[in-house]
Image: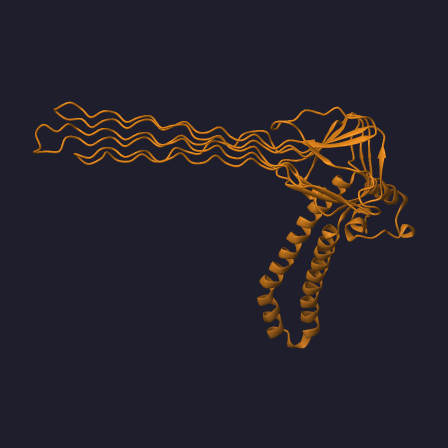
Length: 371
């Protein structure tokens, strides 16, 4: 077996059975970043699954041939059986390879130090695979480095033994600060029947809620090493603006055979949609191996709504600090309906719709730090 096959199988090789070159390559591969090793193993798993499917297909294709050989080779059933067994054995090997990789990759990631940074790297994006079921011996955020979830990561759940950070380190859990798009305007009504005034346009749709900050759970913390200051940013995202109010209905024309009656007025525009509420701050859950919050950690809500600015932090301290997302603006009122037309004076246009209410600021989510 090669060094990669040993690693894929999830156990250490017998170095007495490996050439010196393979021992060197295996050691180099093992010491490569966990993320790269795991990427390689995921690729190997895809190949293993494909090989299982291929072996199953070969067996199905050759079943007819095996049956035919059994029929015409009554005197050499051993040869026929051996051929059949060979196919079955190959399939079992492929299945064992696949199952071994799946089992290995389903186990928690284990990092001696996280994140694994390249020289001069100042930002590290936590992938989805790295965000869940991860065991970290030392979570170290060096001076000036920002650790943040990649797009699409909604929560982080880690077992961490030691937390350490340098000066002006940041763990940015804030939601994206881009507003959700405003909803579409309600569909217009057809013109009112002759002799009938237009009705008011429908109210605009409420804006989308802002995204909450990414939740963070750290378990089993034994100690925190204060070599600087850490800002855990917890901002919620902004709410979306309310939608445009619906257009007032076009007023009906003069009713036939009724002389002296004018065409009817158009309907008023619809009220603008209410702005969406801002997103809540991140939910923080830190549990310590010993003691009930021995470091007296607490969350602080900044004034106003997100985005928040880096607070003034004393050295050797942690600031879990952020703001709820700003509420979206109320949507504009809908345009008035046009008055009906006729050979006599036309109906009057409706009134414009009134703007919608602004959305509420995002809430501060409950956080806790327990032993």
